[in-house]
Image (cartoon, rainbow, N blue to C red; front, side, top):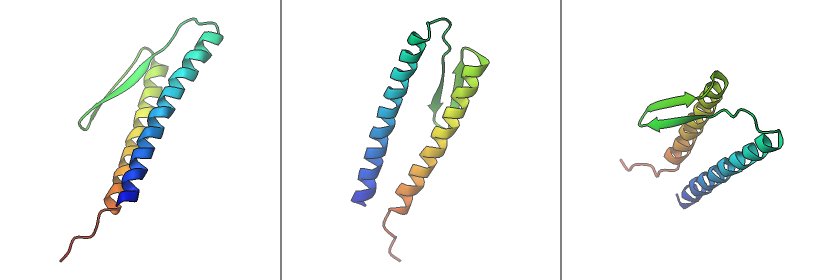
Length: 90
């Protein structure tokens, strides 16, 4: 049980670091490319309902794809946590 808990903590920490790194690299890449028009998009999940937004169709589709991947990752982590629960007596 303790091993699964640490696995989830490490996975969460690594996802946060990956997100920070992606924001940093994207900002750096946009700046070195010469600036210009920037696009933005995102996903806000309230309960089971995702709210997807974007400043362009491309940003919207990218945000939707990233949101779908994050939901699949969340389901996988839930299944890992569920399998690590001890069996019920009886």
